[in-house]
Image 1 (cartoon, helix red, strand yellow):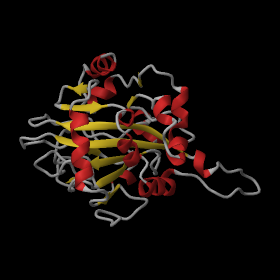
Image 2 (spheres, helix red, strand yellow):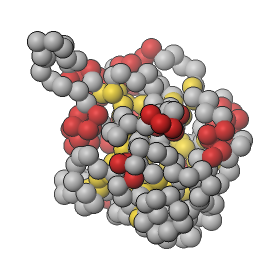
Image 3 (spheres, rainbow, N blue to C red):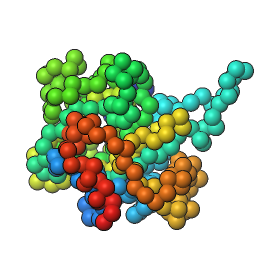
Length: 288
């Protein structure tokens, strides 16, 4: 993997160009677009949850060895015990939260700048100076300014505060005022962006005629219960077919049961650009 945007850690994000073949990405687009359980947001954006239950190739991206290795470096724990402290076995340190298709439709509206859970739910004075979850965005179609590539603010992970709640779309400065310090995370199909949950980011505007399609996966450490977002567990039938590493990363899901869960973030959902009706949309879509 060639580092296309940044060094590994601690940074706002990492980008790696064309990690997997474009042909593979092309074959993974249609199942996302035709997903029967779309969780739509009124701004022209939707999730297609639990893609690993539809095709094992989505799981292969979610637990890609290079991504997991970076996650161990950034949010994992020690691997050797100390005289005064035990250690958590490496295979138990990371957990996969989700592997959802993400689609930005042509003509979408701006979203609010935000940090991913659980950062946005913490006391404003207690935001850590390190990431506690990592989100990977696999680019199945081209991510560009025109297609609405995710936008992020470099070095925002060092601020230890949330972005202002009233700024939407491109054009935000490092100090939170209107400006132009943000940048799009661009790449060709097969590329991947890895974003820490303390980094300011938002979706871009898709001014093209085609949907922007990706696979969004979240990894979190053992000491967090669940990281939030739309969560549907891997089915037990699918889990038995996974390789040992994927099983380790998803074993906790077997305890979730079959009921869909989405942490109720109330006003925070709307402020993050998800819209006032998102909770109803999400749960209704799960019942289709």
